[in-house]
Image 1 (cartoon, one colour):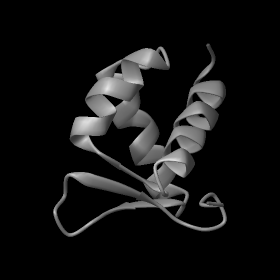
Image 2: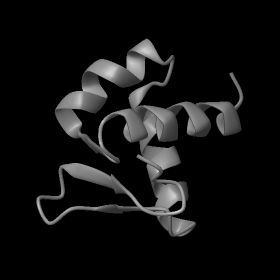
Image 3: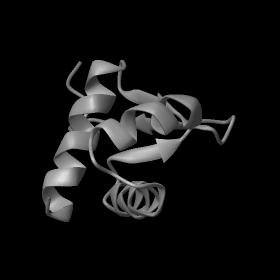
Length: 71
């Protein structure tokens, strides 16, 4: 799966989780999507650089921001 496809899968999963994903959720859901931990970190950094994601104050929850957050 290409990185863009993985990013789309991650965004879709986050939308299904109310536009957020905790570290605990990621540990379960990312392997199911075929995304390893290193790739998940890379994708989350890309999403933050694009301005569509940020970390919550707890630094354990990745928040999806509009326009990527559609739920």
